[in-house]
Image (cartoon, rainbow, N blue to C red; front, top):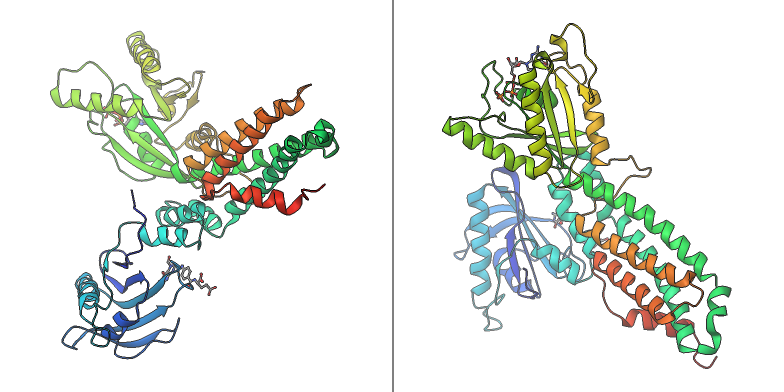
Length: 468
Ligand SMILES: Nc1nc2c(c(=O)[nH]1)N(C=O)[C@@H](CNc1ccc(C(=O)N[C@@H](CCC(=O)O)C(=O)O)cc1)CN2
Ligand SMILES: Nc1nc2c(ncn2[C@@H]2O[C@H](COP(=O)(O)OP(=O)(O)OP(=O)(O)O)[C@@H](O)[C@H]2O)c(=O)[nH]1
């Protein structure tokens, strides 16, 4: 875990490797003495200045652009210095080392180190400071990481939406509605002579219902967003030669796994992430399941079972060309039995009939028939996978939410629903009602990272006159 500190920090901000430009970024308080040591000229606030970056002997390490963002108007809210140099790893390492060295040099005018305590930043530390200094809330800070990690364009777009605060604004809207309700309930508690009529007059039930609708809409979008971020894991399983590797290749549109008529070709797991309408689907091709005396094949089969046990969905392949052989069918039935026993409840197993092109008369089977060779049925499978994933296109787009947000929202919904039960009761227990609403707000606050009960008190006292 990242501890909360205010030491000055430095890091290479750009990706490792070669690039046209690379950036070394420093954040902390009072960077002026450091800037004076490295930059040959003073820097104007938030203005790029082209100059040599000097080493201890005054020799240029590189020529580049330096920008000083004085606090609080920077990414972190602290003083930030950016050295935008040429993007070679050695150059950037030299600049990084130069920053650490210059920080420890004694400044002639003050007799102190130029930037005492400058150290390498830990992962996420710049963003953590942006959060601690109120530049972004927790959901936005997470969106920065998600934007960088986005594996599909849809995921990147929705992370961008969260970063700009669209998700946080929805959470704030819910929070305001909750605070308003709590205010009514707490006032009723504090001034018992107002009793339950007061809640009725204020249409507390109507307000709670509106809140529930609003919450359901946010939950839907957050769930879809979490799906875009995390995707689902689909495992292709079946007997040897069923066409598993061919199906993976057809879905991926590339020759990833070896296809051959020799049963037992695939040994290791071959995994590939494909996109279906922007949803990342992590597909794993596995070794054909059968009794085997081959040691390597046994290891492959054990790995196949490991994959199956962590799947969100299993595609079970049946070879149509062998479907009328009783032995083959008995083999499939046996594996399916085992599969259902090993899989956690709720994980769907989709029966997929392969090699549709190779049979003269297409028999009717439950499930999906397809041909990896001709592509027949592949689109239908992709659509089916999206359904299994629970994907729904949401108008106005989704926010790139995390499982954490989805869980927090579910807890909010639970508490709000318990509050609704109380309110609907003939004799509502106001203290329980107030407590459920308080817990709902706490769960909401976990999403944006806003805590503090004073917030609520502030609102109550600003709107209610105690003398009333
Ligand atoms: N060169 C560079 N590019 C970058 C970053 C960076 O740190 N350096 N970023 C790093 O992630 C992102 C941009 N994030 C930033 C967020 C806020 C401020 C900033 O100066 N905020 C001030 C002023 C805002 C304003 O003028 O409106 C502030 O919040 O007060 C800068 C970068 C992406 N591009
Ligand atoms: N006609 C036809 N043949 C197919 C199709 N899919 C796979 N095959 C053939 O079936 C054989 C086995 O295919 P693979 O994809 O290697 O099967 P697998 O299930 O991965 O096999 P193992 O690695 O042994 O578990 C190969 O000869 C493929 O060419 C298809 O859609 N149509």
